[in-house]
Length: 107
Picture 1 (cartoon, rainbow, N blue to C red):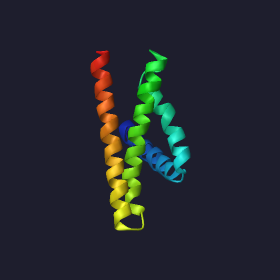
Picture 2: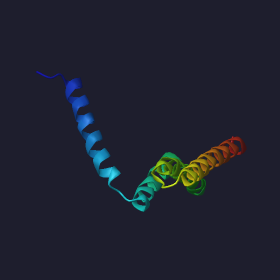
Picture 3: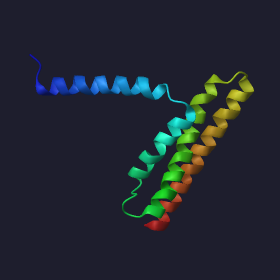
């Protein structure tokens, strides 16, 4: 007989595997459209909507940098792989710096 915690963990594992299958089949544009409301939610859309749009947009830029890093391994030539890798890394670093600047200015 399973305990409540074991049932809960098995449910979490099932939901995670189902979400992984469904999210990996999304195209790049649909994945970013899904990520934007999530980024807005976590950046405080209810507190200050304009500021949340700015923060959400910076999060999306960082997310696109991570996706570029991930997609770099699928490119045809070695030079193209490294170009995408460096571009993704730069986008992530720049978005991180902008988030830090905004946090310092606001607080």
